[in-house]
Amino acid sequence: MRPWPDTLAGRTLALLIGMTLLLIIGSAILLHDERNERFDERSRSHLLERVGTLTRVLSDADDGERQRIIRHAVQRGDSIDLSDRPHVDRLPRHPLEHKIARKLNRDLSLDDRSAVRVKAEFRNLDDKRSDRARRDDVPGKSHRPRARVHNLKCITIAVRLWDGTWLNFRTKHFENPPPWAGKTLQLLALLLTLVVLSGLFIARRMARPMAQLAMAAERFGLEQSHRPLAEKGPREVRHTIRAFNQMQGRLHRHITERSQMLAAIAHDLRTPITALRLRTEYIEDPEIRDRTLATLREMEAILSATLGFARDDAADETSRATDLAALLQSMVDDHADLGHDTDYTGPDHLTVNCRPVALKRALNNLIDNALKYGRRAHVRLLPNDGTLEIRIEDRGPGIPPEQLDAVFAPFYRVETSRNRDTGGTGLGLAVARTIVLAHGGQLHLENLPTGGLSAIIRLPQ
Ligand code: ADP
Image 1: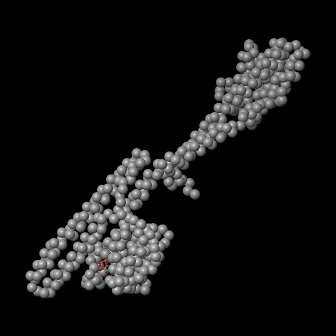
Image 2: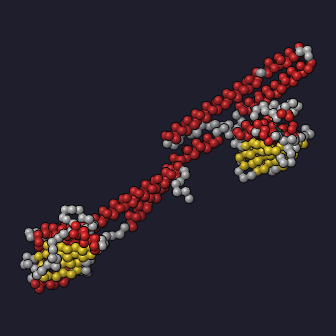
């Protein structure tokens, strides 16, 4: 699998998902911290409230009552007792100890700061580290280990009552902060799904006009129809589509003008040729007269071939579903009727989308060549997956391999056929190839190992 998607939509989506995940993870961390902070505050005030209340109640009670109150107050993990000495032998050092001591002092309105002593032992942060932290921590300096109640292993708070007795409160029971709320996770998952879905929708919408543009560019030149594309999508894409439409229009106008000009020249040259033919009457040398007439005939042939091609090209024939097998069979039959050696192998029916008049002209040129130079035309239609192949084979001399490409050039003729006995103009293959290319296909020639030439047309289905 590719690590980075290839399509515009894929990349946009990947970016969107990546950013959203980052955002979710980032805010989850922040949120988690915030929750822990709140939880810590709550646990602390709960602890302070217990110790504060106990101190107040015990202060007002006599000895007998005090033991009873203590018995009632003890909870899981607690140990509470009264003695004449505090169980904490030092003043607060750690920020948490300071915080608790200060708060208790204030709550109980004690004037003497040494009346409250706190000793915190941490659990999560390994003992060494918490020891070091405790040693290093100076009041006012920011606390290095997370000074949170749920990180405590044990806390001892000693408070001196008014009669000098010390209340020693020690607890090992601390609630853990609530784990990740399922609801929050569900909400985040829902959020991610929403982002992915809307991202998919947006990315697709963005990429669609680009794909259409690419398709139109591929089709351009293959189809005579040159409908402008709808200008949809974001501004940059709309600009590109507009530029493409304008280019398509300009090219189409240009090609049409050229074809019309070619047709006009071919047409207008006929009159001077006719005039020249009349003037040959005045040539006295019969040999020169005949050669001049032959040249003029040749020129006429070239002009009518040019005119025919220019007219077809300008004719804007539209593509339509055509039974290609039937078309080939009827062409072969027509030639057979004229006594030519032709046959057809292939399916009886095969419908393809094409411009039948143009395609027929191309096929006719190839069949004509096969009959002219190769004495027979064996036409085969081979439908493959996605493409179809038309082969026109003959039994002639073939074409020297180094000229197999050159013969497609307009007016190019192989030396052996230069004597024009065959009456060609050298335009047949050029025209055939232009038409096949305009169908999105390919035309090439191959010499057969058994002798003869094979013209191969490949068309997309
Ligand atoms: P032309 O009007 O001369 O037939 P084409 O463009 O059809 O013009 O062909 C160009 C040249 O290619 C021909 O003059 C001929 O020499 C050669 N050629 C075409 N088809 C064949 C073939 N089937 N066998 C041998 N030579 C061929």
